[in-house]
Length: 412
Image (cartoon, rainbow, N blue to C red):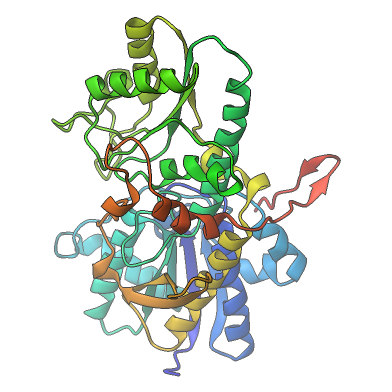
């Protein structure tokens, strides 16, 4: 072990998930072990990610989570207990004042380990901070902890948070299908699922198949250009089979020219990373179906519950989220920096994983799409190979801690 003594700092960033606090729990637990070994003095949590770094809004996490019951409640708590932000750091060569201020704060609190839990944009911050620190006479290790329900980080088999979101989507669509099956009049139900550039979440709508139940009649992902003509043709074919048609669509589906299908229902506002705020795809298609077929039609936008439904946690997801958080601390203690923790599926028919790190440059600002082998030839459904990939990720349940009929959450 390449020993480095000092304090640690951890933050959460980007869209929250039902498992991001489980990763934080893993960071806390591994840091407590390092504290007992005399390697980490204090683990600070920065409130609201990088915003908390620059405002020096820190909380002593050892003081809050030294006992196992508090950590058990933490891992069952949805969203980001430390708060989040969407803050883009400037390029290192153009933001000397920003990075000098960050280094001043690191020195002030003797921060030698920096962990940032987040997705694509958060890994951009990890890449820039580690690049800057490498050029300074201050030894410090910067490690990214993966998180995103979108499952679109490269180099990892899947991302913490995805399994629980997939479990919620699969369960909710399964229930919607049961509800829609009771009538015999022609009707279309459109279920809009999160997913800007990658359709991983929407593929989870097909998971009722693992218990022998039907999934949606049609599934559309951003990985394939969307055609209204083909959509109408697909609906006509589905009506031949039964009168109640259920369709799952990613919010980010686009036409062949690159325009979002839901553009007419969107504000056009973008975040600091240039990402357009999406939504409204289901409503646009609802209107189109109503005008073309004249049948009963409704759209359901799953929206925020996809990422905060802690009553449907995947045990696999929570276990691995916790484990990868702890692994990132261990990697930093052994001298690694400028990297991100990953979950790698071992070969073989039985599901097993191992943990590793990859250079952050291989991850930041890149997107992993649903592969061609997971999408059917018609572009309106998924394959058995995709079901096989997804199924282990939703296994097992983590029961909430209930009080007076409602689940308890840890509020920091």
